[in-house]
Length: 312
Image (cartoon, rainbow, N blue to C red; front, top):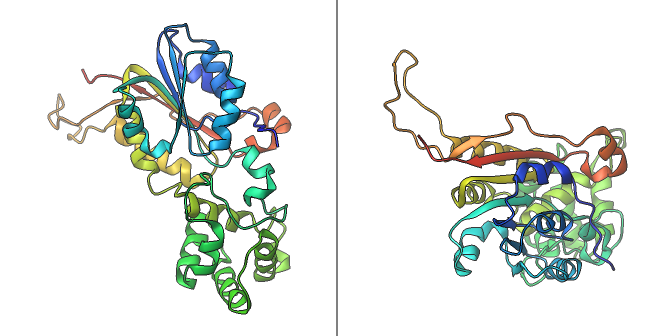
């Protein structure tokens, strides 16, 4: 299957990065290279784009799409390890970092990957197919309490208790191996009168996917480390697709910007707080109405931008 992925908030991301032709830029989730293509177009022969992805199929697709450019370096890895991955390449600082979080269109559409609740497939959901933990293990081996915690916290699913209990009942009969089997259990766990807010399995699938790929726990620290790796006036541009991601990014940006804790009546600051720069987007940038109509997967997207500055 061709790796198709329509980049979300493309123009807003490119504008947000404020690209310098000779700069070093990182696409920490290169995917189908939709954003990366527009970044590298704006670089001179002295500029460098570093594309990182945990999905080897994404990297192969990106290499094909960007085959006409010689100033791109590809790294198979997790953006949560961005500091180590860049240091391993001898790079201590960069001029911009883009993170397009969540699952890609290709991963959703490729039914063998098991991300979709629409297509029947083996329960998998691994973004990096070289890792051991997959959705089948989570669904069949996690305790009822662990499943409830994941589904309620990561999926914000109000029927998490019913779903966790019914998963455990069903797997006693036989191992749950496919997405359709899991969808059927979820449908039976939610009152039919409450199944009018999108697909009933959407939140549970999101929760299991987040657990399998460890998408949330390291995110706050990833944002902090990314912000610290920027050169002066470098930009960190992050797209999120659900409230848990957005909250982590927002809180990390606030930490990076720093806050004076001195009493307001003091004439000058004495707390010596640390600031690594400035939040450019006090409120997140949202897709236009036109983009939401053209690309339904953009509807929940939010874009936040941070700029590195030395404290004066």
